[in-house]
Length: 285
Figure 1 (cartoon, rainbow, N blue to C red):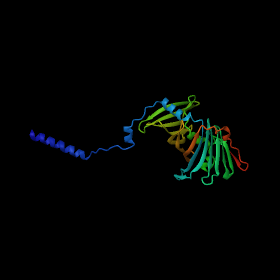
Figure 2 (cartoon, one colour):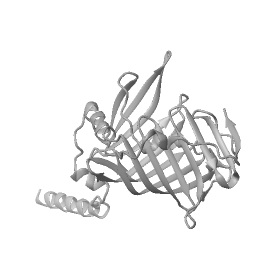
Figure 3 (cartoon, rainbow, N blue to C red):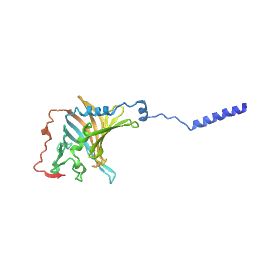
Figure 4 (tube, one colour):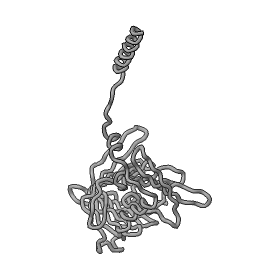
């Protein structure tokens, strides 16, 4: 009996030693470890909608100076062409007026001037002596992808508007794996319900970090990421805005240099763009 007991003890020690050779303990590193250490904030759908109101409602107008860094994608070659940053002035006035004036970095001459309301856009390209007028929902026609950049496309990304309670339904997704809350904005068109937007909130801060918009077929029209939020008086606004337009095959990185909120200088007359006498008119329908 003693010999059998001793043998059992030796066998147990041997197995424990052998098992230890094949087992190791790893320490989790960021971001997984930080997710475990920092539980996300609890938020309801109503609280997140209110969060959007907090960042959107105080903005009645702004004058922004920014650097625009465009890129053009060529899916056939799986390549991206990055262009030099362009200095730009961006004017916004509720509900849907936007004007973007792009300037040549060294000389300060106008590269493009474009305005838009909720229906129509106008673009002046002085170097080409071209003046383009069309509806905001008109299809892209130019072989030059950057000439298809519409001012209302930038407006869609620059300001995160809250859901409209008269037309929109909302659903909340709690993505615990990525520590995100995602607000799905759904709109009814006749007898169909269509996903129009996704608004992403970082789970630890409830800050808006991303917005995706969709067409009626469900394809992504824009995918925008927001970072480096700063306070401008009582208004919070992101300093870095990365815009992707996958259907249009271009991207624009917006780096805010300065911004003046709710200025009385942003009058209705600032959004009037007349055709230059020497420019050729091109209508886009």
